[in-house]
Image (cartoon, rainbow, N blue to C red; front, side, top):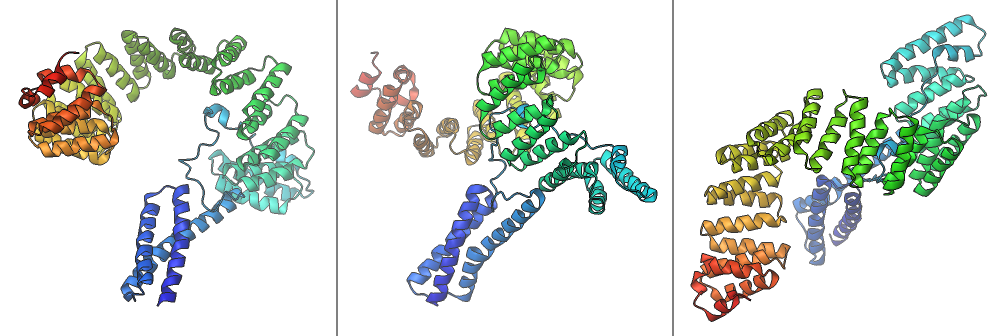
Length: 577
């Protein structure tokens, strides 16, 4: 029995190590539960082994199920996924891949400079047919028919349908670059970058005028496969064949960026600009790279050069506005966004950006006008309703603000901030029942959000429904046990409900989160005083006053300390310094 048990323990230990590594790479609740079950099985089996106890068959089955079989299911699943990934991408990325939600590939880069330029589109059927080295007219006719059929699939973005046709044709025909090129594009669009690279390589073997396209698309496939050195070589060959190929030039720099060499990428763009100072795209991307690096002044100069080259460039005005906001140049940012509005009055984004900056400048009425413009162009812009509501509230137009918050919620029923702001607004209008109804509607939509429960509890507390507020605060704590603010309110509600011992426990838990919190010490002092435990109350009050002098004057008028007012130490403490 001991030998069998020892074998089980060794197997579980190996699988615990595997599941621990898996949990580190892919943080999933199911994996965590499995690991906990493994540890439980491991503990029982070790105790059984040490004490040389023969476990029941049912217990042994539990060891094997929890400690071995379930983790092996994860192992098999990961193996299958690994094989599938290698088959699709032609690239081994590890037995367990990092959770994509935790991956921050090329972090800090804006979307426009974090992806290579798209591949060159497929060659027309006529050019492929012209490139065919086939003497039989009937065969050419059938090939053309098949290519047109594939083209119909491509026009509908049905790459799988087109793949079947091209896969058959490339097996039959071995000397048509255009055919290989198009097949490479189909594989690329299907995410089969390894196969795409293979067909682009075959297409690049030809000597037709568009050979640079094959090298360029090959570079893109290699970039997707993270073979950056090879991608650089392919882009360089494309540039040898077409010196002024701007997309390839940019992709060279972006590849350098992906390799973690932003300095080289910047230098490369500067070289492009030194050869062609009128290259708007190069100035624009260099500006964005400089912005990402925090060089806002240099970045702004590059974008201004872009606008000199093309005064009607919408994207340049948009980027200029963002840059100026980052630098705190809000008035100048408004001017940039006005440029967007002037160029494209039908595009809501200019009005939205302008309204956001006007609000920061304190020009709330003008901001509201901009957000109204957005809503006119894009009626489902819940953010515009929300921002407009905030501005209206601050201008004292509460009814209009409430209506705008409600509109935002209608468009986006799970918009937590809108529920919270509307609830708070209704409370300030003494519409407490309506506020609570809003919070409850929000909780129904977002049951995992503690803030709605916290605000509901505050409203209940303000209306004297202390015990109901205690329930709300306790539920909020279940969702966010480390949120200090909830403990403050919970403690106050418990005091008002005369649950003094529970209030003490709440404040003690708060101290574990923030050991030097003056407000918590003060609140503890009030509870201990109410319980008649004056010495402990005095100790906590001293700590509160040491941390925050203002509590000295608060204690003079707080009725909770009435039982201590005859004590000399208390009178000495609250005496004005």
